[in-house]
Amino acid sequence: MQQIVFFGDSLTAGYQLRGSESFPSRIQEKIDALGLPYKALNYGISGETTAGGRQRIGSVLDRVNPIDVFVLELGANDALRGIPVRETSQNLQHILNEVRRQYPQARVVLVGLEFPFDLGPLASLGGGRYGHYAQEFKALFRQLAEKNEVDFVPFLLHGVIGQRHLNLPDGVHPNAEGQKLLADNVWAILRPVLERTT
Image (cartoon, rainbow, N blue to C red):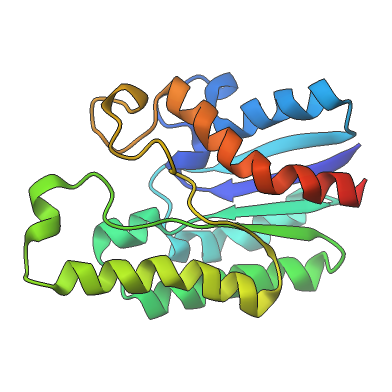
C-alpha cells in the first residue's frame, strides 16, 4: 500500500468537522472506488503557518515511511497574518527541499491559494496594499510549482470561496459540502499523478 501525506492547515484538517468529512478522507473514498493502492494520511493542523510547517516537517517525514505522494497545502494563515510573501515562499521551499531530500522518488503536489479570502471590508482597507499583496501571494504558488517542477492545484477553494452555503458560519472554513468540492479540486490534479505512479 502506497502512502499519500496531506500536509496542511485547517483546510486540510477539516476544521470543526468529523475526520471523515475532510477533503483527504473524501479523496480516500475516490481512491477506494477506483481500487488504487493508496492510503491518504491527514497531517493537517488548524492554525498552522508555513513557519510552523517548516518546523514540523522533519518529524512527519521521520514518522511516515515511505511517502509516495506528498500534497502540500499551506499559506492561508500567513496571508491572514500579513506575513511577507517572500517569507511564505521561503518556508514552502524549505518544506519541498526536505521532502525531496528524504524521499527523492516521492511525487509532490503543491496546492495553490489566493488572498483575500472572505474578508469583507478588510480587503478594501489600506488603499492598494491588499491588491498588491493578493497578486504576489497568488503568484508565489505557481512560481514555486514551476521552479520545483511539481504538479500544481491552481486554487484549492475554487467554487467554495464566498459561497455561504459551502462554508461554516465564520465564512472562512469550508463545511462538509465545501470539503467535497475541495476534494474535487485536488483530485483533478492528483488522480493523474496516482495513476502515473501506480
